[in-house]
Image 1 (tube, rainbow, N blue to C red):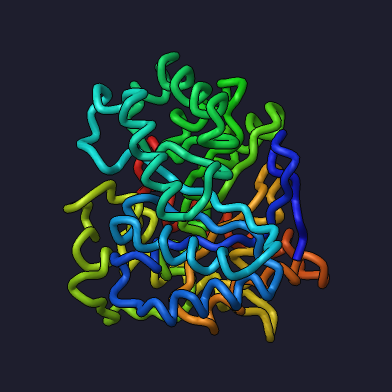
Image 2 (cartoon, rainbow, N blue to C red; image 1 turned 60 degrees about the horizontal axis):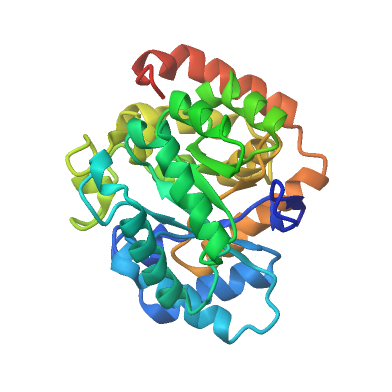
Length: 330
């Protein structure tokens, strides 16, 4: 597994990380035993970045990670958590007092004195553009509550605004073969500024697993059912905002272009990780098999996978079948 510098923090993180939304409650039930097994398998296969949030299972994801790491010894894993979704998404709720309360709660959940990395969790644009936001975050760093901070965003414009801030460590943005706009400006700007990029929703909520058909259904408590059209939160978080049936057809076309022995999810993760400016890709996993497959995708980067050939197919499918349906802000 490649390990890459995490901006100016002095830390390194794996090219393939682990997103842990699934260990909360929005992807159907995952037992704590199964969640812990996912963490074990990921760490055993060289994954050194766990991405979580204080609202994943109302802190369940953080707490499971905390208990796992407490028994892991010198684990070398960076935990990137997120804050800001515990209150209504109004700029006036992003106060130093709330920042302190949210980070204190995450510190308790994770069982640490200092959080490795805290990211604002897709806040309103006004928050990303406000000087007072970064003053409050700098104060948390100075106090030792957090070691570094970043911003998780919905749009490319938000990403560029965050990248322009001198103490931002990373930007987390949706980036995958169904969401190519970050290639135009965001990745070059981040690379020039020395800001890390975490590519989230890399498999488009499973559409790029290559396992779904137009008839596939999901549990009622799975966001792929209840947020398919943006009923609960930003539609772009579910299937990357792509119409499900359109995404299934596009995924089938991408899979058909791959050589024997290379799966669509592995090719997708390797393709994302190979893009200049990407520090880590953070797919989720609900079981050990998925965790091991995600981690193994990192090996394609060193095994001669023809990234350029796959890139040509990705861009062709996107331009022909997907570009017109993607929201212009994404």
